[in-house]
Image (cartoon, rainbow, N blue to C red; front, side, top):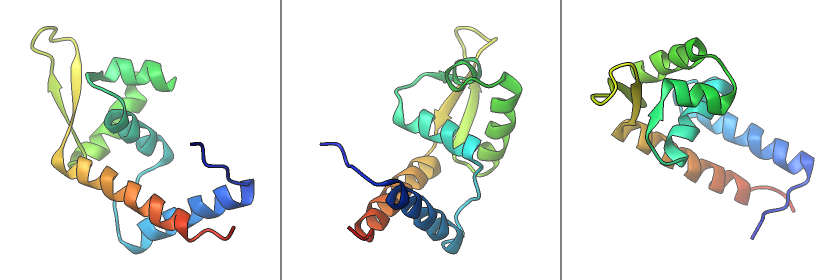
Length: 116
């Protein structure tokens, strides 16, 4: 069943989730990093730098820079594809899975606080 939000409700939800992330001192991710992270965790693998760049409509260096940051935060990891050494596979990590799961919980909690 689709959830119907008015624009003000949607923006309030976004603001409240962002504030919760700031207050909980969670990793600061850019919109681009968040889009990449959620793509990796919400869509079935395998994920490659080339594939993510094509899917998100950005260049491979943009993906690489974002993955550098998220790798340092242990939200994702990168490995050479043993079948095709030209490809870099992006893998999920336990820390990344916990981050995405907690983020989902925050979105649910904050959506319940929205005025009708």
